[in-house]
Length: 264
Image 1 (tube, rainbow, N blue to C red):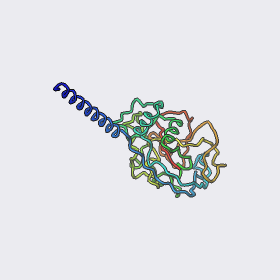
Image 2 (tube, rainbow, N blue to C red; image 1 turned 120 degrees about the vertical axis):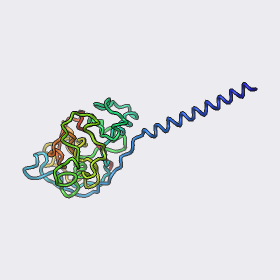
Image 3 (tube, one colour; image 1 turned 90 degrees about the horizontal axis):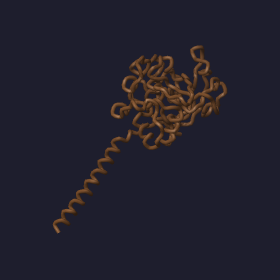
Image 4 (tube, helix red, strand yellow; image 1 turned 180 degrees about the horizontal axis):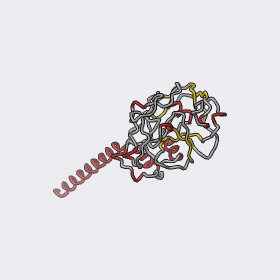
């Protein structure tokens, strides 16, 4: 009888320990889950896209009117913590330089080393999508035609992360995605200039502005390059302009490119 009682006590203790272990694991998982990025409403309506005059590059001209439907945009760039959750859930191959990421140190830094297909897949996994080039530009410059997200003054170290000559590392050249309050766009978006350039959904067309539709343009039907916007931590001020256009093959992975998502 005594032996049976001891066995029952041991079973109860083992069951309790198992429950406690499951609870600890659950709590650890909850603590590891990344914070969701808030989204900001970008109102529908017209804005002036591109630029005019001799200061603008050929593919940035002409200045033209675009009408957009309202949409929601992530207030900041996708972080390493958020992208890590995507990798764990989907088994997708890790980005370039992922082995250098420390979750404890870099969880709030923008993910880099992702190609266009990676960015597109992440946004779809979140029930979102990449912004069109026109959506990105309106979110960055608003409706007053400003040159930079914060206004028309040249960039300084108080408003953007740019023009760093350092060799890449997550700790040394990237800033937390919700940095630079003074550099936010008219809609309150962080780092639409500098930190990392951002993939958008459009194929690149050098003369696309000359023939693009006025309402909700989405770029050429096909192409060789995808468009990037915003400039990065290594770029000079002239590459941080709200209307500046960049192009790279969609398979490109480097330390200058990240992304954010939108939702219709």
